[in-house]
Image (cartoon, rainbow, N blue to C red):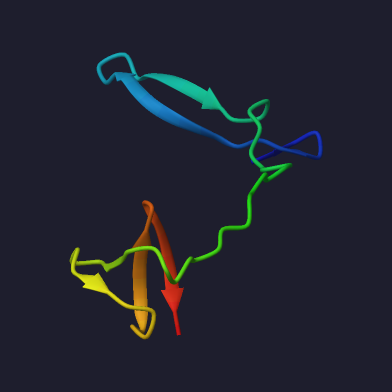
Length: 76
């Protein structure tokens, strides 16, 4: 819905069907985007133990998703 050239986003919930009462929930002042993302570059150590998604130990020649130290990596 556009009100005064401002986009209004909201939802409605029926409170009382007999009296036709509705509650309106507005999302206008709620942040809806991600501004900053902090990350650290993770590197796979081929000398440390690695496991596939089934928990079986694999080596550095395995192709697919491996888990090392609780982090998932995709080996190609």
